[in-house]
Image (cartoon, rainbow, N blue to C red; front, side):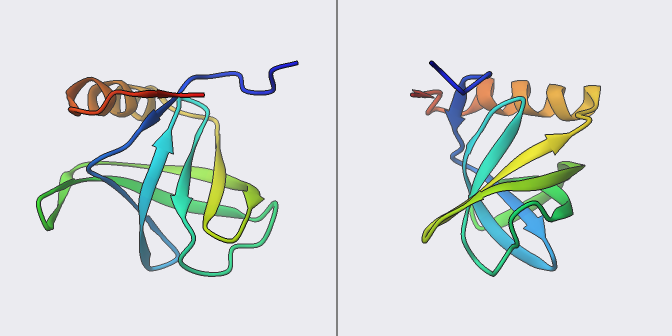
Length: 108
């Protein structure tokens, strides 16, 4: 039985600001995202995260959106976060960034 409710997409050019740290987003869906593991985030902890578009080496803070997210999985290399009450702005941001990236690979 498939657990995944939404398709995940690769995320070239997106980073996440969480707990004053920046981590690269590895993949994203309308239900959540997976980031590189940069620090200890506790399972089931809730964080205010900001997803930001990166252009070259610079963060485009005008192209960003904030959302509350809960840690649902932690392993040696990544952390999975589930969005809590995604807003229209968050969903629009995901759609816009998945549609504009050169790598719109759906991940299994």
